[in-house]
Image (cartoon, rainbow, N blue to C red; front, side):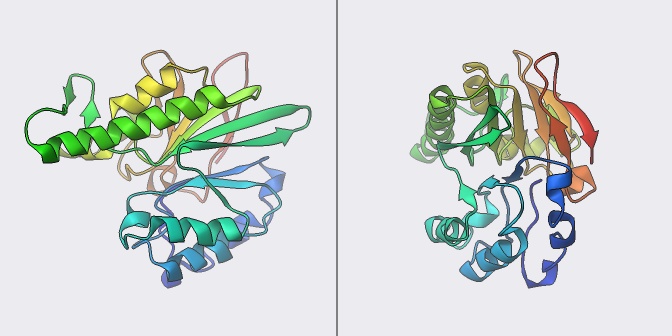
Amino acid sequence: MGDVHMDRGARGAFRPAMERIDEHADVLLLAGDLSNYGTIEEAREVVEEFRDLPVPVIGVLGNHDHQDARPEEFATVLRDAGIQVLEGDTAVVSVGEQRLGVAGVKGFGGGFAGRCGSAFGEREMKAFIDHSRVLAESLEHALHALDAEYRLALTHYAPVPDTVRGEPPELYPFLGSHMLADAIDAAEVDLALHGHAHYGTERGATPRGVPVRNVARPVLGSAFAVYRLDREGEPLDISS
């Protein structure tokens, strides 16, 4: 699930669905924009909604979680409550005799292959694209570092245009970057999850066929979606 945008007004909106989430899933993944303005007060609201669940909780931050310019403090509040927050690093969850490895990064914009920005010209443009490149490289390094039977990439920004379709084309450069897909395709990845594109589409794939799912709450239309990883084929939706 992603883009829950917690604040006082959303308090308790997800908790009832979370209490028995272990009946549906082995891990809960949060794809960023956990708050509206990235305040510490909102971070505490996120904690109250997702702490002490019967499954591990792993997430990344989104652009809204950076709005108050204190993303490290925001993430610390979550980590202190047992919610793992990834930014260029990994988490591994044991599920029976197998391990699910998650590499996470917020990601950034820049656009998609054929219609993307480049690090050329003004320093502001170079900084924009370089930020996206650095985060994509950190995702690739994290994916390669995973020691697990299954690997999953968790971002806020989209790695492919498939899952942002439905959004105005003018917004595509601000919704994701092909560099994230390049990072995913450079590693052995079973599934990529992201949020951010509220008017996008749930299903897509990287150029090399890695399934991508947009789990922004407005796209899902439900509290969460459940995916089952299956080596025999792409992940199968079994509930939502």
